[in-house]
Length: 108
Image 1: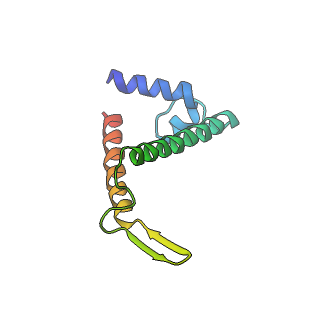
Image 2: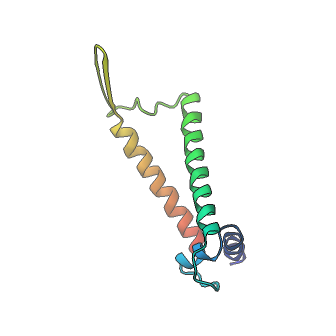
């Protein structure tokens, strides 16, 4: 329980009561202010940058993302088409597991 309280207080301090109320944690005020929305935008941007960094790191480590069996690639003179179907399925499964683990840890 103490870890949940720490995470809760960190989110209140970092994101404001607006986010905490959206998750069902009552903290006090219910108004949406611009600062809370700005913090959300910054956090989403940092999340996108983190995902981009992980993809870049995966390519530097030689992981075959985009070249898995099941990824479609059509090469013609002056035209290349790629549809990374297997990579998308793999990333979807991994992100689903990660989100479920995080949500279960937060609910304890």
